[in-house]
Image 1 (spheres, rainbow, N blue to C red):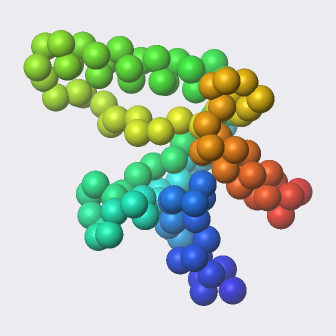
Image 2 (cartoon, rainbow, N blue to C red; image 1 turned 30 degrees about the vertical axis):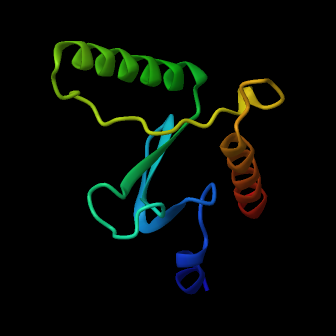
Length: 117
């Protein structure tokens, strides 16, 4: 059933999770996905979604990426990292910083947790 339904199931109403794309460690889980906002599946539409157990690791990763991107932009260089195109943060829920995608993220993670708990 999952093979039949997987093309129709999207994470945050945008990302189609690839069947063979899960990589995990002690503190993170990364999944390969296709960004459905692109018509063709190519290098621009291939993304990796990383889930962090530790808020500290998540914040550190985002901060380092932003600093490297800023430095590269100031010096007219290509960034030495993969760009972070979007973040989801459950701590933004109920605040003025909450986004529609944060709400979708919480919905999808809650549904996933319910299915596998």
